[in-house]
Image (tube, rainbow, N blue to C red):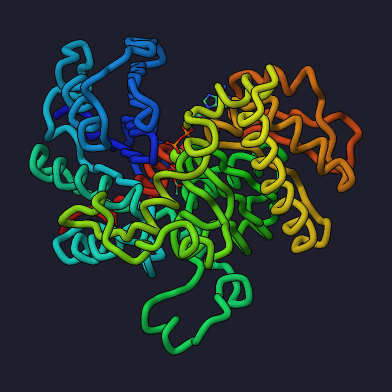
Length: 422
Ligand SMILES: Nc1ncnc2c1ncn2[C@@H]1O[C@H](COP(=O)(O)OP(=O)(O)O)[C@@H](O)[C@H]1O
Ligand SMILES: CC(=O)OP(=O)(O)O
Ligand SMILES: [Mg+2]
């Protein structure tokens, strides 16, 4: 019999990333054997990258036909199955577990096997994560159809934030209605924060349960997380991933009244709604037509950052808005941690690649004891965690190559005996 595989699927708002792992037992760490991703879904043409056993097979191939998470998944599965040299994955039955990153998990606090009931519960949450859940569930359906023997497990971005205390997660609104409708802060990017906490703990030789971090996951969607003793005690996203920091197409926090002055049709159903997902014009505007795209015309922060450096006015404004909002969270979380901070951590596409952004943020929070080492910051290298702070500074600054797929695979292997279908 061939080796059993875990396939981890991460449907982000601008990308679909899939990693394939082998595993032998619940106590051994899964080994990544292939990684394939399609990114740039919000700034076409999308590009494909594929590597197997550490060697690159495809580098940045432009694929004009792919425009959605579903297209991306179909393209990825085809690429894997048609790679006849990928001997570990020759047949769909080789995949024992498919791990799906599901952004909004409502009250789910643990990874959950997806049966019909769970699927319907998650469908009901799609309206609360309009850039994510519906796409992820389409992929679940496709795996279910194409790989009938595979067990599908949902891993929730919101689970890591189940520890946020009441004052931080409660909105100051009528609590009867809040409870009835589940209106509270959930928080997202939790798979990433869980991974960041663990690998940074190992980098600093500290137990994961004693880590105090201000962690920034800055991707197409961006958030900040305050971690005390290895647990989330606050985060910037809220009921939905719209709250907090701006993103590629998201406004982040605005005065809630703003939308009624922006359009008189705020409450009407948006033409962007589908059979499975209902969103209002307000949600359409603030989730899909705002952020970097609205300010600069592009969702690629790499481009924005370099144009800002060349003096483009709107790109500079977008860059400065981001720095302004990020440092607001760093200051707030520094106070929540009573200044007892092991590190400020940058992760996610922009956090890992955006050296100018890191430099600008760290400079602004210099008064708290963070300092950047410019040469380390320019080229942090390929290690999972790298120090980019100045030696001798009061607090450390780290860059972490976060890996939501590895986080899911690790948790899946550990709990495989419980997650397997009876
Ligand atoms: N060199 C760069 N500098 C700054 N940002 C970058 C750079 N390269 C890519 N990015 C940003 O990273 C984003 C993708 O981040 P990622 O975390 O992979 O996205 P997702 O939210 O889809 O998971 C891109 O949209 C782009 O804005
Ligand atoms: C929650 C969220 O915004 O995720 P992503 O950054 O992957 O789009
Ligand atoms: Mg992401």
